[in-house]
Image (cartoon, rainbow, N blue to C red; front, side):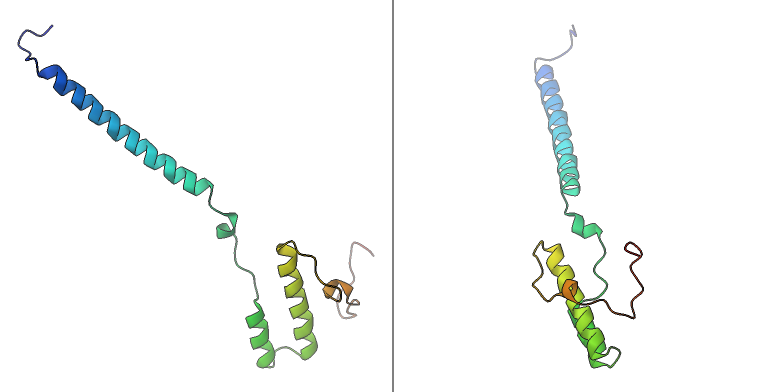
Length: 111
């Protein structure tokens, strides 16, 4: 086709196309890896942390902002929630086995 084209010109064109192909595959692989990591990220990263920890409850109790009864009730509920989230049944005598507190509002579902 091109009369003035040297025999090395087609080789140079092949190397240029190969370089472009390698760059495209590299960029596509990096984008794919980024998307894979983003899609497989655990859901816990998106959820806010719990409101209270056992250390927070102990501090409130120690500072006198919670009575002994309130501390024990809150501690039992916190432990039961952690066990529930870990798919472990709570032991007998947990918060489910406590009699209802008269100061709590009545359960609307049961009347």
